[in-house]
Structures are given as C-alpha cells and as structure tokens.
Image (cartoon, rainbow over all chains, first blue to last red; front, side, top):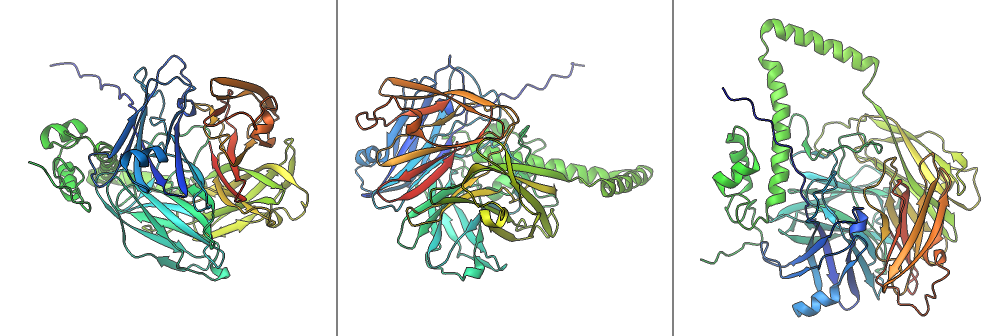
Length: 271
Length: 332
C-alpha cells in the first residue's frame, strides 16, 4: 500500500483587474500603475499589460505592455493615446490590467495589483479617481444567492442631484442586471432589465427620476447574474460630477480589520 | 473555421461552448471537480483562457456549496442513536448560543472634516440581503460614533443611534455632535454593537459643501484597520494640471505614525517627514508638503507621491478641480 501523498501547497498566482476607460472631446482617463501600491519588494521587477476590449470578448482591440518596471515606477497610459491609435474619438470601454512580477508569487491574499483610473473633464461631466476592480480572489466572504449584489448608501435623487451606476463585467458572458432604489420611505423602485455584455461596461442613469425629499437619502442595489463590479457617480442637474466611489457586496462576515480573512464568495445557506 | 461571436452570448467558456447550465451539470456530476479536470476532460479554460477567473470563481462557490450540503447530509444520515446524540448536542449548542449570542462589535472609522465650506456627513445603509427572508442583524442595528480631533483628543461621542432594517441614514455633524460648533479636522469611529454580519453596513464619509464656493458630494468609505499594509500609501496623480490635491490622514492606532514622504517626477525626488500622534488627523494640501518645489515652473505630472511607513492609517486623497470648483476623492 502506498503512503498517502501530501496535498501540494496551493501557490498563489497574480491575477488581472478591470476598469472603465472613458474618452471624448471633453473627458479623458489617465491610467496609471505603480507596483508600490500593493508591494514593497525592491529587488523584483514588475510588468503591466493593459488591454482594451471592444465587441470581441476573446480578442482585445488595443494592448500595451510595459517594460520591466522598478518598484517606484509609474506606467502611465492616457486615453487620448488609445483613441488615437484606434482611430476613434470616443471610448467607453472595458479595460483589463494584468500587473505582475516574474520574480515572486503573491506572498499574501493580495493577488492582484490594481492600477488607478484618474478621470478628468473640461466640462465637469466626469471626474474621479478609482482603482481597478478585483476579478477574482478578493479576500472577503461575500453573500450571494441566485444573483450577485452590490450596494451603495445615501445616494440622492431629487431636483438637484441624481446617480449614475457604472457596471464592469470582466467575464466573457453577458449578464443581465437590474438597479434597485430603496427609498428612505421603504419603497423599492427597480429598473427595467439591462444588459452588460461580456468584457463590457454599462451605465444606468437615474436622471429621469425626481424623488420627493422624504424619499431621500436612498440606497442603491445592483443585482447581476455574474459577479460584476459597480461604481456610482453623483451628478448635479447641470451635469457636473461631484462624487464617484465604488459600492460593496453584502458581507457575510463581521469585518475584522485586524486580521482580514481569505475567503471568497459563499452561497447563502440553504440555497 | 472562423467562429462568430454573439455579443449576448451566455457561454461560460466560449471556446468549449459551455453554457452556465452545462457547467453546473459538469460540476454536479464530478466527484471532486477541479480546474485540471475541467481543462482535460471538457476543454474549459483550455484555449484562449479568457474565462479562467469566472471558472475559478464558480468552482470555488460550487465547492463551498458542496461543503455546506455535506454537513447537512452528515447530520441527516447519522444512525438513530447518534442522531439523538447529535440532536441533544444541537440543543445544548442552541442554549449556549442564546446565553452568549454569536455577535460581535464591528468597529470602523472614516476621516472627518468641518472647515472651509466643507463638512463630512456619515452615511450608513442597513439593507436586508434581497434573497433572504430576514436580516441576520435583526430588526435594527445600534451604533454610536466617537469623534477624535486633529491632535488626537476625543472631542465628542454621539448618542446611541438606531437604524431599522432597510433604513438609510445621512447624519450631519450637527446631528451627531450637537454640542460641537467649531471647525474640526479629525476622524469618526463607528461602533456597531452586537452585529451578526457586516452585510451592507460599511459606513461612508460624505464630503459635502456648506457654501457656494465649491460643490461636493463625495462618498469615501471606511478604511479602519490595525494591520500593516503590504504596499505603500501612494498617489499616482498628485499634481495633475488644473487640480489641487489634498491628503486626509487619520492615525487610527494607539501609537504614533511617523514617516518620510516623497514625490518623484522627471527623474527628481523630493522628501519630507510627517509625524501624527495616536488618533490624530491631518488635512494638508500636497504641494504644501514640498515648499522646496516651484510648482509654477515644474511640470510635475506624471508623478508619484508616497509615504514609507506601512503602519496602517486611514488615508484618502481629495482633488479640487480648480476651474470647475468641484471636488472628487478616493482612498488609497
């Protein structure tokens, strides 16, 4: 009888992250990756591959690879450059960044090294600074059922403000999604069924809604078939963006900020 | 042969033409599903690898579900005698839980500002998971907020606040700390008493304008932690043309945060030093940290700004878009 073999230790591998690139005559995105954000290994070299996807979910329309980067390097790409090289004037596209090091495997659950998208605009319509989103391996115990959910608190939809929801789908298959507004008076307003295609981005706007002051502030819930990421913009009625931040999934654990745990999505018990 | 791609396709793996239903069936029929088997036997993730991370995620979820199911079945399949033992064990465990509920205090924190036509609100949503019959935190959650000032002194403590299931609160400084009427740079620490899960409770700070000098409604979520960060607190867009960047730093630990800080651009590097007492906070314009740089003459974009010390602090950057008089922000 052979001796039981020891289960091989699972080796962590670098994984990509996802972001939205926006560009037109007024708006631009500055995409910047620095290894310093997540790592401190000075001896290692780092690399970044940034891909932009169009209609084909398996073949990017644009790709750029960095040279070997030092820890304190900044790999910078401007949306104007992408648009110029693609011969288009507008971009509202899904981007994916694979930031990695050939010299060491991730030593902790932070297996993705995100980049930052810095959005700027001449007309005030799109401003923000947001890290690329985890596709896989986020160290949180997330609650899911038949669908995946993300929430955003205390939005306002009234005579002065409204909310736009941006959705990023890092997977190859399309996903339907719905946006739910949970008003302060307990009413739930749900959007029509929407679609975000594979390796795609989508936007849902509440511009058409004007809710009573008593219904504000309100929560926003995004319900999706696949595990997408959502972020939320606050806009004034004269089209100025005055806030941009990401939401959170429902967390099954009590967050312990002393020793973060390493568990990914777990289904609702009994489902 | 060239394959056409349907934009609305529902394939989990395009190359192997595997639908979500097929994928679930494959997982269900396998004795111990794993990525190697999916690749070798079904060709999933075998070619273009675009579906790798969704497949890995779905596989993890399936395995977690399987563990839950196995636990349930194990209890059901116990022989009669063992079943009685199990039942009595469960009853004992139930009483033990009632005597000492499996609830925890969830403590977290966000930066706070009331100054120069801006103030921080606190926003919290207590939403029931849409597919659950009830909120594991019960009909409501209770919390209170403690405010610490620029030098680390405790300035105020809110009353106990009750947030019902599916409720959302936006609290102004006047709501939270009515006795406080001065300008404040600091941090709010939020203690949720006895919660079963965080759910949707992660609080956000919300920077809003209080006069017409500029406009802001910037959400910035909690960043409390006591661990050491794996990387550096950094900002890769510190000096963008037409934008003024501010650093908001709150030392959430009972020890001093002391660090060298640096900025690097066009092959040049400039440094300084910062010290923040326990529980103290700073609201500082980044260019004021570098009086040695003539920003009118230097082209400082792209640049990178960072602090050396990995001791976790609550850190955000806020940008004022000068021409538009708008604010934006993000954590790092």
